[in-house]
Length: 96
Image (cartoon, rainbow, N blue to C red; front, side, top):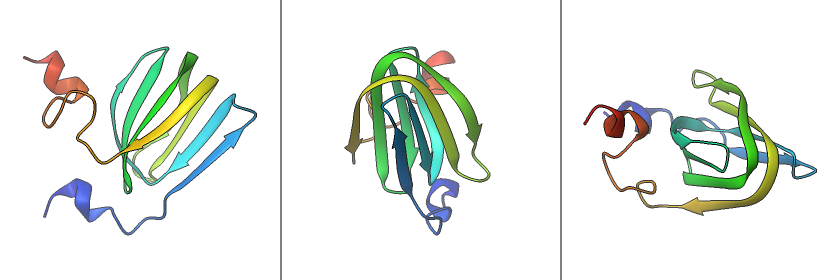
């Protein structure tokens, strides 16, 4: 069984505070990130965060928790395999 699918028993939640901080649980992996966009895989599909001056304050994949701070403009769910398609995670693109 795929490790990413084995984690699906965790709960998923999104808590946003004043559009400056978002805490997400049920996080399986971070696909890519920069100051404007964070793409992550959760138990409920992909989430793309758009904003300005975004930075990851906490990432704990064992607990499935991610905290991002900055000016959050949008949060979007997607069932697709990230922005670049299947097999195009951050590290896959890095080691081509």
